[in-house]
Length: 222
Ligand code: SF4
Image: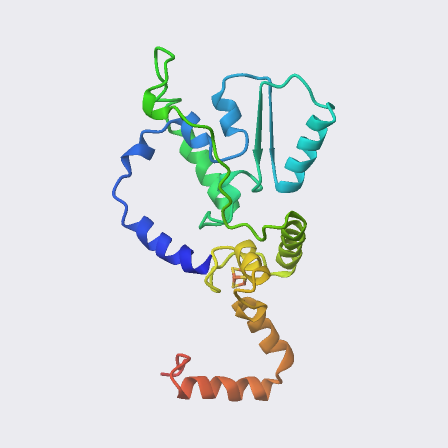
């Protein structure tokens, strides 16, 4: 994640008016959050759920025929939908609020075909194929175990999504830990707190002096 987040952020800064997206309306940008796809169907007979545990529960209920007569089921593994996913580079709650305010000023749907016929370019001509992306493991049980481990680690992280560790969010950082791509001590917030907890005032001062001498810290008196 850390290899992707910052280059992606840099590239996004250079985008000039991405025409395809600015032409989307309330319906189009709504797809980024849970219930957006369902709302675009203009059909009230739907169910929309998010978060992997909730999606599993819904699928089990459908399997057991506890839920019936739906025209559309929208399931998002990420909490809140795509906007809460690991590749959302800003804090998911801030992204969600931005999405809501963006929708307030958009037309309903500038791209909806007026005659009800979808253009050829929007039709999928071949069956959808499952493409695993960034999965924890080929083994489903192991992948679920690692997912729970990631959520557990995330609960113990500061949760401020500052990005100092190179991952865009604490959840993405927890994912990197579970994959063995980083260690908890890369979280600068945790390290800072450990630094203050474990070293005496005298030792902290000595470390600071050393860092200043090597140019690793700005000299406040300079
Ligand atoms: S440095 Fe720590 S608090 Fe900041 S995003 Fe990374 S894990 Fe979260």
